[in-house]
Every structure is written in C-alpha cells, then in structure tokens.
Length: 396
Image (cartoon, rainbow, N blue to C red; front, side):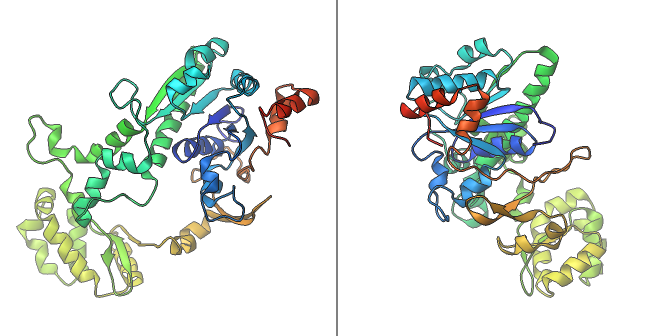
C-alpha cells in the first residue's frame, strides 16, 4: 500500500463497527493493518446476512478493506506470545476489548510499552474509564440514545428513534483515527509512544451538543437547549420527489422570492436582516416547502443552482449509486473479490496530490494471511505447524 501512512504497521484487535471502521480508514491511508481474529468465526460482523458465504457479509466486506487477517486464540499462551511479538514491531495497537480483560491477558499498555516504548496504544471504550459508566457495554444505538441524538430525532418525528445508520460507531471511529494520527505526529517530535482512550459517549455528546448546547452555552441558561433552526430543516417535496437545501442568507432569500414570484416580500422587515430571518425561520421554511411543490426536482435544481442557492436532490440508497457526480469521480467501483466474486465497493474519498492511487486490498478471508504474517515474524514452518497443532492459530 502507498499513502501518507505507508510503513506504519497497525495491529487491529477490534470487532463489529467502530474499531474496524477506524482501522480500515488507517488502511485506506496506506497503513499495513493486521486484523487479529478469534476462532472459530472471527469478527462477529462476518456472519451478518445477507452474503454469498456465511463468513463474508456485506457489512464485513465494507468495514475491512486494506487489511490482512490472522487467527489467534488468545486463551492459549502461544497465541498471546504471537500477538505480543506482532505488537513489538508495530507502530499502533487498536483494541475495543475491555481494559480489565486486556490487563488479564497481559496486554495492558504498561507491559506492552515496556517492550515497545514507541507504541501508540489506542483503547476504544464505551465511556471514559474515570467515570461510573466505565464498565458498561456500548453499542451504536445505546450511544445515540445517551448522547441526545435519539431525542433530537423525536423532536423532528414525534417519537424518539435511532438514526438508521452507524452514526456513533463511524463518527467515533474517525475520532480514533485523528487521535492516532496526531499521536504518530507527536511521536516524531518526542520519540515516545502514547496511550489513548477514545470513549464513545463523550465523543458523541461533543458531536451532538456542539450546535445544540446553544442557549445553555451561557450560564445560567437563557433559553432551552437546541439550535432551533435545525428543527425546521428537512427534505422538501417536489412534483416528483424531494429536494434538499434552500436559501440560507438574506440575499439568497431575496433571490428565491424573485424566482417564486414573491418579489413583494423582499421589502418586508421580517426578512431584512439575518436576525429577522432567524426569528421567522419557521414561516420561511413553510413558504419554501409550499412553493417547491409546483415543479419537478430537476427543474428546481436547475433554477436554484442558477440563482446560486444551495441545493441537492434527495437520493435513495439505490439512486445515490447512479449519481452523475459520483460516477464521474469513480466513487462506486465494481471489483472482483477472490472468494466473493463481483462486488461493489467505495473509493477512499480523500485525494492526495503526491500519492498515486492503487486498488484497495479486498477484505480478507478468515485467517487468510496468518502463515504469511507468522513467517514475517521469523517463525519456521515447524513452529507454525506447532502453533496450528495446539490451536493457537488456524491451518492455512
């Protein structure tokens, strides 16, 4: 792999969503990511239907590109020895195993850093280990609820509900990525590794509350929490679909009034300043919604773009794959997977002027690279056979 993280080795002891998304992103940036999986089934996400094979689900395929896989049964001492040797030569170790379990396995930061002082040790946890939620399990939906996000969805739809996306897992996965890359930069200056804790709860509360702390930014609060303007925004119905966006600034609203045949509103003091627009935002968005029903989505996109008013059509999960812009940049790509045949994948969204793009390494089969990785650690064929015999690792 080429990329800004070329020659950075990452040992990935994570499962499900947040951790694999973080390590895949590091792999997209050129890191050599070694995914450590437990027998007999590996990452739990492998078994999520539908798939062509029982252990290669679409979720797994889309969270584990640019990785190699080795099977290690960490209940067996010889397997722990292999993992320790892997970490000895690594730059980054990422785990979402509970801290107490890691200490029990002899894989706590103190012990590993004593062997590899330059190690970046990243622990993904549900909540800060300094608080009363330290031992609680955490999943995407739990954190959506605990962070206030499910409540916000209820403000829009009447009843609280979860956003049907892994928004907590993937957002906090990216928090882990920026923390790890910052630690790698710090290591260049200090020569020393770092122990990083990335808590889901605190990360998502910061994400959700950045706009919605609002009036509670001032103490005592001036009004209820929540950025009220956001509650009025939604996709707007057109003659044949839905459209997203619309006027934001006073000048954009004036241009929209011209387009809509409502030029007389341009002189109204209700819409003359940014503060006035904010005070009457519900009325304005209702007007915008009513006017948009008169034309097709394509017609409105053309007219509003011409007036320099931000606009996008609303896609379905199917139609987004045919978006002309995404097609032009080659974002969705159909490639051949060694075991799964023709699959659709997605490109790394970032582009680097000095880095030549290469095809992504396909998500690995369970233990696909295990013996290759063991040979890199200087294990002989006889030693590998012994590891297989004691079930520390899987056969080739």
